[in-house]
Image (cartoon, rainbow, N blue to C red):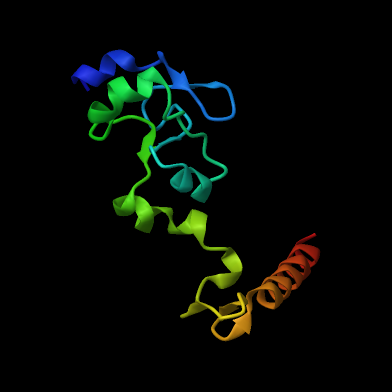
Length: 132
């Protein structure tokens, strides 16, 4: 496109949390970069590089990036439905209820989440063994 943000394609974006630099670019050619001012939201997507919200670049570009056709994923409440694949462990998919007991035990459809994960891992191992 010829919008005002296209001049940023290929330019160094800003420092990423944990070190490194991100690049602006079309989503087809550049890896996705997460953008949020809340550290809690960054923790939800540990495998996605996140822009350092304390950088000057973040402050300057924050109002403009939301609508830019770039490789930047905004992490906010509206983004949560699109992020569910990152947030929900595969072992929990297809279940209906996740709850936390008063003593802190995590249940998935009234089954201990750790036990469910172990069952899922065993089943996945069997599938891998058959595939080999």
